[in-house]
Structures are given as structure tokens and as C-alpha cells.
Length: 416
Image 1 (tube, rainbow, N blue to C red):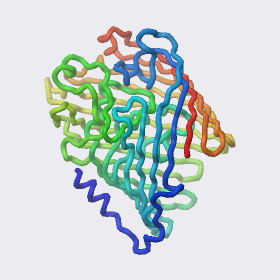
Image 2 (tube, helix red, strand yellow):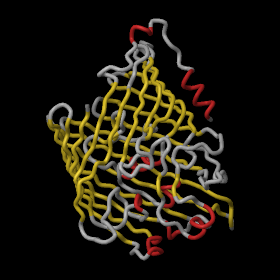
Image 3 (tube, rainbow, N blue to C red):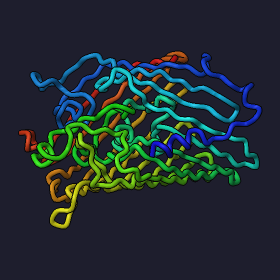
Image 4 (tube, one colour):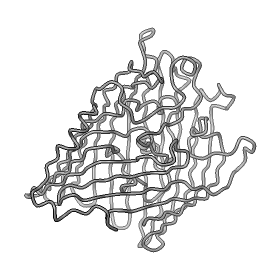
């Protein structure tokens, strides 16, 4: 798989007139962004701190009441060089609260955009990136615009579904609309499914990085003692079996965009490293729609999939978990900001021989958010997020299966 990715990076052709378009280190190609917050939160221990909590933050163990404190959440250094008129790149170094390394690599890829003419566009990229699933994330730092916290669907894409490979997108104008088709071959995502099976869904903006690990909640004795590492590495190749995804995007008019996406990492569920990082066979389908009318926009997204891991036992693999989630978000845009409301539901069903139905879950969440742009480089956001979920496995650590949590955040985002 490393050979495949390297070949993809160097296979993109360079036009002969390229030299005059080169921009490497200029104010247009180097940028920085930061995110600081004041958070108020109650509820159970977060999955990032060794619990089953659904959000990024939680109360401390000594005081289970509502906690309020400032947080320095993230800083990004973004480099978007242009080598030729057609060939560019994106490299993002990220420092996140809770990240294993002080600074890590978020994305690194080359982009090729040749001039084809005739109403047809081709965009190809090769390297490390997130698949084009999210309707919420924008920009090279891959951040949501109108809220602070992405939906459960796109939170999971952010923390576990990052690939290394080659992607090509062809777009064709059709009357007043357009049709796009995307196809990719990838690797480095063999552990996708670990978090969705053991932790379940979560709503947060903690993002996977190239060399970091993501913590798992308390595991049952079979996995904790014999089988599974306490942390999962989202970016890793275990079986040298490339996966693929494909996407169709149809915008028949300027006010409607319809999308369909299929992902299959083709992982070997029996592959394992000496450090107990396992291969997972994970597949999912995602559909999305964006409806725009005047200053209003409605986004809807739904996902359903299945992930498998381990060896057969009593006719079933150790882990066999199906998952589904969906949301609808309405946004009212203003000259210098927006207000948004999002409602969503999520769930998993576990029927594996070692991860049974007590690891299934169901839940819902409501999010209300407002954004205000303060000048060219600064934005302020406020958000209230409430989550209610039920998971029988919580009882193993002395926590009630049903939990609810409220998170209030005020964020300042700087982009230079």
C-alpha cells in the first residue's frame, strides 16, 4: 500500500509552462488558525478520558456538577503551495488538546486540476486526507463553519475515517446543473470501526492525525485482557488490501444538491499487529442533501453500515456491529453570521460472539448554535448541545445505562 500511495503522489503530470505559476512560501500559501473556548458541561466521563461519555469535555471526578472553564482547543499551521498552474498541495500541522503528540500531521496531499474545457472538470488528489463525506466541514483545517460540534456522523468520520491513497473527481455541467462522480483507492484505514463498535457514536471535534492514537472506553474482560489495545490507531495499514469509495453528487439546480457515497475498506478482520491493533472490515453507505433558498439552508445526512473484527466463534465473529445515524440541520444566514439548529438520532446493534447486545446503543441529540464574524480574521460562536443515550455496557463500570449530558461552549476562532 505504501508503494501505491507513493506512485500516486508522483504520477500526476506537470505541464511544460509550470514554472511561472510556482508559489511556495507567500502570504497566500501559509496560514494559521486557532480555537480557544469557554466550556460549561455536566454528565458522565468523556470517552477521551476513559469513560463512555459522548462529548469532548466532562466534569472532573471530584465534582460531578456543572463545570465551567477556559480551554485552548486547537491550533493549525496550513501550507497550500502551488507548484504549477495545475498542481498544488495541502499540508496541515495540528496541535489539539488531548492529542498524543504536541504537534501532528492532519492532512498532506497533492492536488491536480488540469484544464479540460467543454464544461468538464477533473480534480485529482493523492496523499493523506478525509473522504468527501461531510456536509458540514470546510477548509484545509477541516472545520465546521456554523456550529462548534459536528454531527455524530461527521464526528466519526473525523476521528476514525482518514485515508491515504488516490482520489479522482470528474464534474460535468448539465444544463443549469452539474453532475460529479468521485472514485478513490486507499489504504491506511484498516482500524476504522474500532471506535464505533466499542465506544459507539459521539459528538465532538477531536480529529484523527497521522501518528496519534484514539482512546477506547472500558472494555469487557475478553478484549481488555487478551485481545485489544487500550488505544486505537486510525491511520495504519495492516493487510495490504486496498479499499475503495465512490460518490455521486448531482445538483440539478442552484438550490438543490443530492449526494450518495459508498465506502469499503476491505479490511481483513483477522489481521493483527504485535501491539494488538486489529483489522476491521468496515462498510457504510451515506446519503446527503443540501437545500438552499434565500438566506436559509437545510442540510440532511444519513448513514448506515457494518463493521466486523476477529475470528469465527459459535458461527459469529468476535465483533459484528451495525450502525446508523441521521440528522437534519437548518441554518439562517446573515451578512456577518448565522444561527443553526440540528436534530439527530443514532444507534448501533452488536451481535458478535464476544461483543454482544449489551454493547448496542441508541440515542438522540439537539444542537443550537450561533456564529458572528468579527472582522476578516476572527469569528465568535456559541453552542448548546444536549445528548441523551442508552448503553447497557455502562453498567459494568457502575454507571446507569441511560445518560444525558449538556455542553455549552463559547469559541473564538482566529484565522491568519
